[in-house]
Image 1 (cartoon, rainbow, N blue to C red):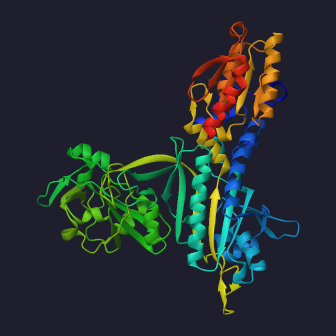
Image 2 (cartoon, rainbow, N blue to C red; image 1 turned 45 degrees about the vertical axis):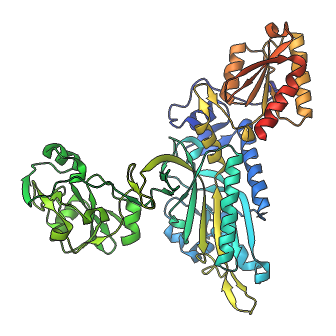
Length: 564
């Protein structure tokens, strides 16, 4: 392919609203253009990257027995109503009515339609197991689409679904996907962690996420280098460091207008682990008082598993429920449900005195809130001890690039996806659901592989493998050699782009670094006088001068060795 014939609209500046490196570089390098918030046009280079990622996904899914299907994006409300998700999912689902007035939606995932198909066409245990997958458009009305293709309103997803006769079969299908996903990300050149995760709106009994380390991520994972424990902080278990708060007599302390943890610690000249934090939340069953140590963060999802949906209490609700102004709440005496993090079982702390302008020193579970329920409701933090081996945890920012769920019968029961077993008994099909975001893989590759000059693509998903740059297109020998190398490399099966533009060398080199093609052959008049050309590796920046006659074989060998 010749550069002059390809649409590559590179830019000198990134969009002013772009924060993520991948967002800046995908726009600047001419891979995508933003049509509206969360809506992106993929340009020729972007399409080539996505096609390569999708090809790898298809190969690995086919290798585990997956069969490709395609579900409609437009879904009737009925299948979503049968599972209860029509009402459970909020404003992120696009809903509409057809001309007949029937409720419809634009699918944000396809559990319902895949299960509908199984319900209509699977009859016997002899037809199980099945793995069906698709690469299909999804739509989600994101409240805050951002970070380029990482958080969009329309996106392509590879979602697959396993159908088994029993839990043992689901275990096998789950393991097949667990291993296939590792191969997919490894082939795409992505560094990743496999972590335990929350099942969320998908439901089911078990879930894992594949997370690519990146500062642009929107999730945090807790990792233990001692035993390999890895979990999303949504459910990560940890043992907080012991507090060094001194034991002492119960003492009331005046803390005028000091309400927050920061204000109280500064005023009393203590560290935050000396304090007890009392947080009132409003649940469907009434007010609940959540108690964590002052240096801990209350984990909303962990608490929600115990009390259901909830929200922080407003100031007037705090006063009405507890008779205490916000900022001076203590755990003592309140006749409402109280849930405390286990770290509070030991020690004595400074807590609100249930009296405006005062805190109480020496508050302990044994003396002051023995009616409490203890449950892990804190967010795992760096330096906490691993709950499995005791070694310190580290917290890493990550991009979610895939997830897998054991759904069980969550969808098959309401949609009547049943089969007849060997004895002729009707049983619900056991299901799993498995998703990958191809665009997230591309973005993660850029986040993990870029420098101040541009993208550094992994070889397997780069838009082209080789870029040939004749420095002076008006020099006949340079262009003849460029054409010969282009033809010879393509005949060997390599993907080659030749920069045949009549531009200054500096412009060509800047664009070459920006779009990030792994290997560059530079044909310059000065080197040609010595019968040499340069081969530059984008990843390492290493430049090697080789004889003209050896350039094709030398470049081919580098690619073969990297692919080995």
